[in-house]
Length: 409
Ligand code: ARG
Image 1: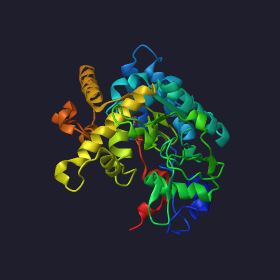
Image 2: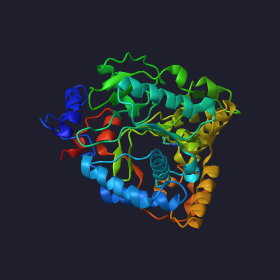
Image 3: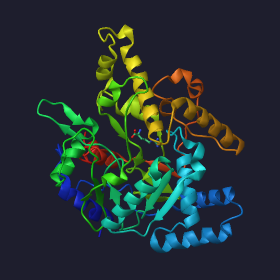
Image 4: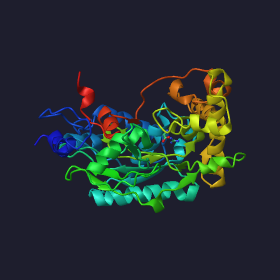
């Protein structure tokens, strides 16, 4: 049997449910990123790096290289040791060129869940991840690594782009209640049977699919989602807006690639930098778009751009985010502190003889760029492995869209 058939089959069945999917190709192609065969050269490269960076630990290099070669020859892939998995996941973070928060790459907690197969079991582990990663607000960077893709046996997937995201409900007048970025995903899970509450901050259910099971919905229990109601230290009216955000950013649609092996389900979390919420999620015009409302409450003159009403409202919103998380005892950092930490990381890595691949357009914060030190320099750009990859199919699924539309002319 063609391995990709088995993976796409459930997708094909659900395709009709995916909103706005105009494609009716009989064989839409795999949503898997590869064949499941491990790349030997990449495997060897990785194991050599592991030994180089941990000369004390893992036993003789040559024996390990031979063992990997034998396993790939016999099965098309190989199994990472626990140490390799932990090291690989940490280095994947270290190599993530868009992440400003990499100073603590070495302390990433790695949960080895490669043997979990049933969707119910996977769901339980995801909830445990939320609970342990959130840790009552003292957030711990954590990754849960589930089964890798193997020949004829693709690993499990979560369709959501993050474990915690808010639904968006399109109204008849075209406006959206909730997060507009998830309006299509919300329609998708509603068609699959989710009982949508219809509020502005409803946590979406998870879609989990495996090699043996069609995509299924699982709820994220409210008790396991820590949220912070936003208030402002000087403006009492701010709390009345009823705006909140979740404490944990946990990305669930990126493929972790270690030593030539793909782990399609490896959700990871860090803590928030305030601007992600206060300058993007609540501000982008295609997200919560709150600046006009906040400017009005601040009494700013929105009649002309030159009053800088947007900028002034933006700063007050970011003050509210940092203030509220601190009040609630939830770990968060500001963009000045995180920028300085990043340069500390670059310097530490330089001393270790490594360069830090970085994407300036992502590293520089979306507010006050020029008054953070990360603005005033350039960075090396390189695709170093291990790393995390966002495949186009997963990007589309995460937004509730047809995964095949990107392939169309
Ligand atoms: N920017 C994304 C969000 O607001 C989260 C990305 C990961 N962020 C992090 N601090 N680890 O939801």
